[in-house]
Image (cartoon, rainbow, N blue to C red):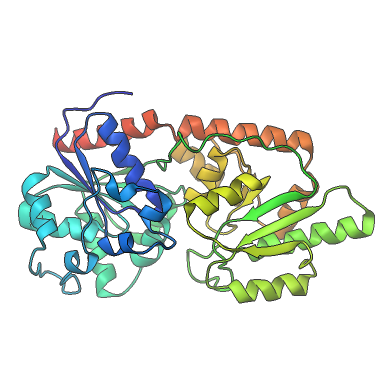
Length: 385
């Protein structure tokens, strides 16, 4: 792994989906002094999204420097007014040379820049850019300003190229950064053909509101599954399905109603989403992982499933994937219920084996530590000269 000791002390603010943990760990291994700042409230609760719950012992890691979100964000609702600096803001401003912010923490980084002159880099997730940056609230206005004043913005989902164009924001600089995942833990597990074939629907259940940009359109999968099951029942077929649905999101009850209406409740069951360890167990027990059918991208859930050697069924804009990665993503690409039906009908031991191998190799290549570290250090070095 290349060494990047020429970079200054870096403060990483935010950790959605464990990306902050993995990036700081990666930077430290390369010799970059880095600290991770997290909202303290997350560390007190053994719940979904709690980093300590996702990574046992994470609270004891030497780079974990938690802060209180309500203190750091004090006064952010007033545009143009800095408000009192928190202890953490003062510490970052006085002891760090660069801030990497993610998940709307660019606003806090903007405050630090205005007060102490410390440059910062942003990292937007899908909903940050498609919903918050598009909003009409004063918070959205401030978030847009924080993106424009960042020295660089990392995009992490391939669909964000088009989303960024729709915002009309004139960024100083931006590029694509693959999600940093823990490839030491997430390596390809065997994925033998089973009877029944296990399908794990991991994305949040969110499909009724087709106006909101971050909707998952899960109903496309269930309608396609119903078509496949009914065809198998009428024509006869060898493939049976055990569908496990992560029970989270705004449309949990509506999904149960849809499953009953489609007549597939005998092969569908809902399972607790749980923490990351439960999620990984569900992925490893599955043959295929089902993501979303609207956004045109695969998020962190899909990337981690692929790293574990599980093919992912989703809708991906391959033209945007090629722009981001220089190559297509090896997903089971589906836009409509008919696409889902055809993919399920086409499953076989050979297809499953080939898809499993291809997706794991792709993640090892395009989400490798070396690739991600090279992007980070090149951008950081370019900012600081």
